[in-house]
Amino acid sequence: MKTPIRKINYNAAESSGPATIECEDGTVIEADRIVSTIPLGVLKHGDVEFNPPLPSWKVGPIQRLGYGVLNKVILVYKKPFWDQTRHIFGALRRPENVDSLDQVDYRSQRGRFFQFLDVTATTGLPCLVALMAGDAAVDTETALDDDLVREATEVLRTIFGQSVPPPLEVTVARWAKDRFSRGSYSSSGPSMLPTDYDTMAKPVGNLYFAGEHTIGTHPATVHGAYLSGLRAAGEVLSSLIGDIDIPTPLLVPTESQALKRKLLEEPKDPLGIYEEQVYYHTISQIGERPMPPEKLNVSAYRLYCATNQDAARERCQAGIRPGKRKGKAGPNEVRHMLSKMWKQTSPEEKKPFEDMVAERKAAFVVKLAEYERLAPQWDEQAVSVRAAYISEHPFVQPGMGEDGVAADGNEGRAIKQRRRKHVSYTENRMGVTRA
Image 1 (cartoon, rainbow, N blue to C red):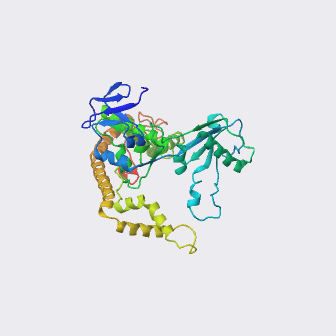
Image 2 (cartoon, helix red, strand yellow):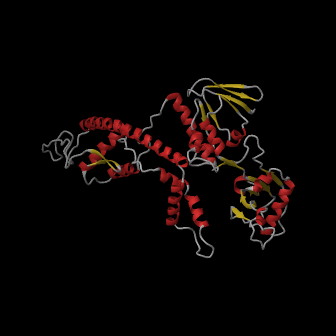
Image 3 (cartoon, rainbow, N blue to C red):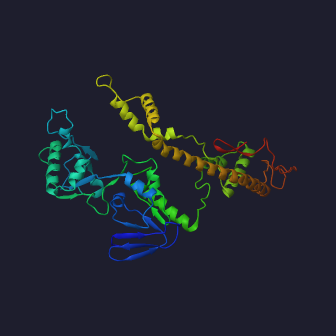
């Protein structure tokens, strides 16, 4: 498909059903489900029409999340003139008035060619990537390539001397002008809610969403976009075939590998090792015993503090009088400021955090009910599997054969299920223990 998308028709009521994608050249693509990886900037710009229109709970995060621009100027040279042992180096730009303490005098140079990345190892060519951030990134959208190259060369000559040559090739990224991006990546907007990234990830009927703007744990990153794609693919697959049973354990635990090595050594406690063999046979057949959900230790105040930690620290820093003391605000000061901010927060501002707590509590109740349902079933199965294994592989006292005759010819007997202590599978904080 080499044509831009004009319109997405989807089924908002169900996770399956007819859906179509209409392209600008008139092509219509039919599908059962659609995964949208449309960048947040394009969604904000309204370049793609959705039918039916996206619900208000989805439009809200699109409007509240920030979406900025960070542009790059890529410079290719005949040979390196910089220190190739350093992959990143920066430049401290000079203000218009070096004696000024007014921030306005520093604004014109702020964010302009302040950092250079050496990407020679990855491109195979002597290549530097210069960053343009903030207002400088916006200026890059309309600046001429020749002017940008001239400025970059001047900055590099202040670092490496007047012998720095002009580049052989230059490529300028102008992400805000790109109709397929409309910016670089998402950010925290001033009116953003703590749940906005999670809300962006939720499907609407048979329309699923992926992209760096849909993953709150790794936003604004390539790996975040990749992980969100895996998540969306899993959601689509689950809607097609249901939940996938994952074998347990998926990987052999480290302690299991240590046990295998132990079994190869001279056994010091034959009965104890036999019980370990019975246990690991059991979990190989029916998996580990279901774990109880972690105890819920969350409150609206805790979530508020986690979200506003930086804001509280900045307030503390702003309150330190010049010359009184140096250093950053201490943890106790930040905690006190967070408590003060929480008390001043309106009920409307507290509501998103209270809703998150209610949502987590509801999820905990569901997980606890699932655990209470599955744990007794596992215990029942474990008893049967254990009994079958002991019947087929009875414990034999060292020095005796399976026929009950000792190695010296004297009659003996197979010792079945003889224990020095009672064996049970009971849970503790770490899961299942053998006692």
